[in-house]
Length: 112
Length: 112
Image (cartoon, rainbow over all chains, first blue to last red):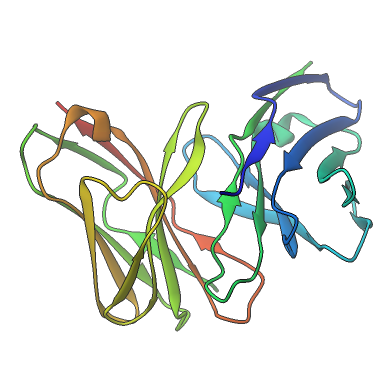
C-alpha cells in the first residue's frame, strides 16, 4: 500500500528557516498536503500542491515537489514560536473517495 | 464557518466497556473519516464513509465499527474497549470534489 515517511523531530532557531521533508511511494498521488497540529488541537490544513506543480508559495510557506524522487518539502521562512507544532505530510490519489495517507508527523521545536 | 465537532474532548473508560465516539459536520459533506493518532505512527485510518449507510474499512478496522445513519453524523464504536485502544481519535470530513479535509478537535480516549 501507500507509504509516507517523515522525520519525527526538527529543532530550529527563531528567525531561521525550517525545512520539513517528506517522501511518499504512491506514484499515482495527485494531491499532496501539509497539515499543522498545535498542542491539544485537531489538524489544520496549511497548504497543498497538485502533482503537476513543482512549487507553491504562500506568504512564509514554500512547498517544493520533486515528483521524480517522490519528495515533498515545506519551508517556513522566519520561523516564529507560534510555528511550534507537529506537521503532517499527506497524499491522496483522488481515487474517488478522497482517502488520505498521512506521514508520521514532524514535531517542530523552536529554540529562542 | 466550516465546522466538525466531536462529542467529547476527553474520555476515560474501562476495559470491556462499549464506547461511542460521535462526529458531526455542518458542511453537507459526503465523505467522513475516523483516524487514530499515536506518537511516532502519525494518523491511521480506521473507517470511512462516502455516503449515508455506506462504510469502508480503512487500514486498522479491527476492534472498531461505525455507523452513518445521517449525512452529518458519523459514529465510531468500540464494541469492547481494550487498553491498546487508548489513543487520540480524530474525525474528518470532505466534499467529494473539494481538496480540503476538515478535522474535528479530537477525542483523547483512555482505556483503563
